[in-house]
Image (tube, rainbow, N blue to C red; front, top):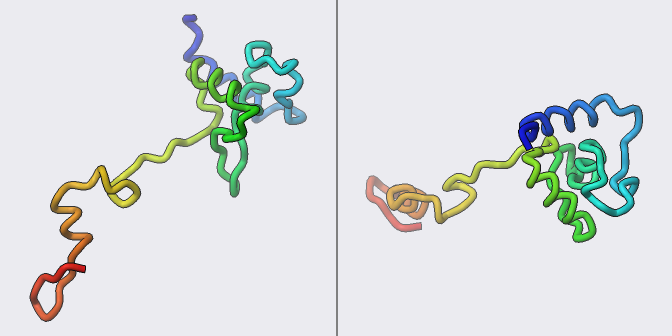
Length: 109
């Protein structure tokens, strides 16, 4: 579909200006029957003021449909770094984190 690039924009506009929050349940349980706003409503959840993809098993189909359409639904994906994933660290970063200086000499933590 050549209009996939517009879906995220349309979904965010619909969510922002909708007079009431549209529920995914209004799609008759079928994600392909949803409007972009309904799809994002079912695909996301609010956690401490941050929008994230829903982890509820019964909303998995909404998450999958939104992602297949290239929609982000306002979800901001965190970028992993060495601090959050040790597998991304270089050897020098690992050594820096695993050691300290004591009386001018390096020691392992």
